[in-house]
Length: 145
Image (cartoon, rainbow, N blue to C red; front, side, top):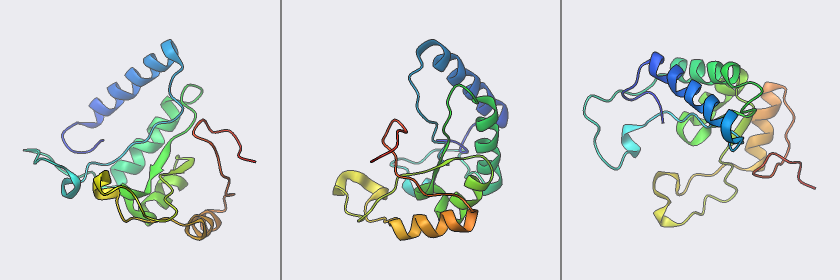
């Protein structure tokens, strides 16, 4: 989560920490920068604000540059950014549209994600608008089929 109480300097420190952890462990397959949304928070956060799309785009782009060769994938969390926001983030550094939900049927305990749907048709249209291919992948970014 980003954009609620931290500064840009804090975000860069966090990315540097992730790079160090990745160098030591090799355990991350992707980074998913998600803007904090007060409407989806289970508790109020005093003093919190909401990241702008511009700030989210900047964080995705800087993460892509700072983590290149370490964490190779940066996801656009469409459930937090909205479809147009995700498309803008994909155009500026992200390489994966995370959280593809084919039927919107999640466990009721899924909270704010429950009932949201992103179909193959939606993904295909968004990719075509960006001039990008569509590819199904595993959780470790291997090709499916």
